[in-house]
Length: 324
Image (cartoon, rainbow, N blue to C red):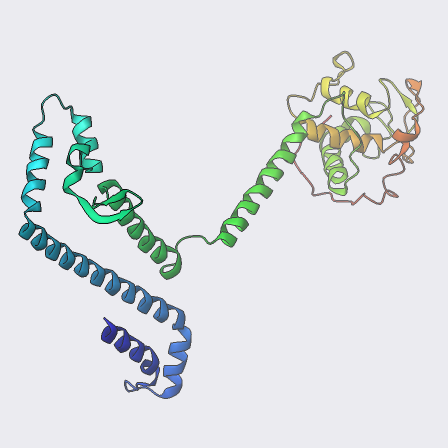
């Protein structure tokens, strides 16, 4: 065994210096490139040789012990005991299985395996390790070899850092999915002004595609009412505008949009309409409805669209969406 280890260590030390018909620079770059793989491969080889040597040693010890026990007449007694256990009447399958799994010597036979070791009146028995323990030990060795090859040699298994990064990516995806689902929870009871530039642009795209035909592109009104003044038919706060878009006004030709728009999109277009108040329309329609004065909270973000810092004129945003 020592000779084998010495030989392998010699190969590790002198292998980079062997020519094999190549120049020293090429050999050095090859070793540097595959240094980890070579070391891991040699480690695995040494481990396999060591395990094989241990196995041969165990077999040899087993043969020696068998011969020794045969000389002492123990082997025949053990065989008789096993035959007696197997032939015992009224012993069920599971009981026989349990006896084989433990392979323990009955209390009545313990005097046959007692040793000369004694301390304070306690004498040691020469019991074998139970098969369940040995099988578990062999399984752990096999698992260690497979684990080492999987993670260290082939690199197919994820390290702790890689598992952490994968979990973080999944967590971010779950957060994005959750935040996206929040848009479906918006209704007239909890809707708020959306001040993000992306939301305002999305609301403008929806408005231009569908609402401008009745209310004019600048919100001055046409078939529908004017959005640039302070007079509103159904209320000028966010919940009222959202509710009007959602349920419509069938008696005046305004359809309900809840079947065609998601709650998030209705919030976006309601925000855009809300922020039209105070704009200068090219041809504003006459006053309709009642004067609606917004409170301080509502007036935040209700300035002209062009002066709103969140506003970005993006005509192409969400083309094809439908609205009022």
